[in-house]
Amino acid sequence: MSADAATSAPAERVALVTQATRYAGPGSVEALRKAGYTVLCQDDDFLDAEVRAAFEEGRDGAVASDAKSPAGAVGQAVRRFGRLDVVVSNDVYPARYLPVDQADPAELRRAAEALLVTPAAVLGKAAAHMKRRGSGRIVLMTSAAPLRPEHGFSVYSSLRAAASAYAQAAARELAPHGVTVHAVAPNFLESETYYPPEAWATDEGREKLRGLLPAGRLGTAREIGDLVVFLTSGSADFLTGDVIPFTGGWA
Image 1 (spheres, rainbow, N blue to C red):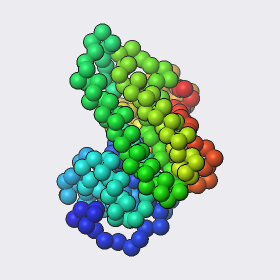
Image 2: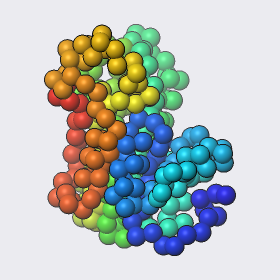
Image 3: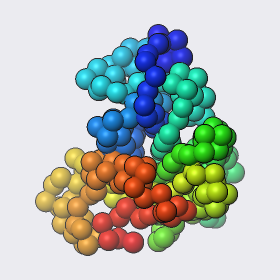
Image 4: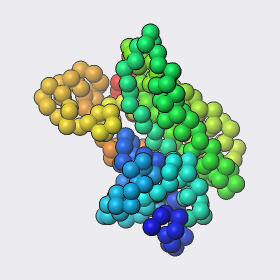
């Protein structure tokens, strides 16, 4: 059954998390549902009904979306629940090594679609609904990579920087309408997408982390989820337009 077709009692608070099984998605979903939200979860893999059912099992308050795109899930949330209070645009694309003298326009376009066009579309659709309601909170998951760009990662770093700047610009535009926007910029967040925990669980891995950042360890899903809940709780609404490094002191 699709998320549109399912019926339910009106939800008191509704959040959307895109790419829910990747990057900062798992931590955001868990923290938001434990905070009392009904969480609509979009993911590329959720076009499969069996995958959706498996994801929902044991996760009260989490609803797997069959929307074909992250922006499509925004409309689905509004249609099903009649409201959308929080959006976490959790955008993912491989950080591929590509020196500037080997520029690949096709790769740049693919990365731009995932890391800039998609969050802009999600933000725009969410903003239209939230402006009408006079309230809402949006978080774009970007990256701290632009703070210390590394050799060979100019495409990834520049697009992440653009998404963070987009969040800041949107925050200025939407603040008069009661809508806050932040960019959370992780690095060294444990996730299968960029920093698989098992790859750093050896003595050698732990020693390398101690040399790379003051915290000396990977950030956890729980920690980034708690940050998302704080930013979207209503307790911090004078904060808007920030790019918040989540880096264990690396930046």
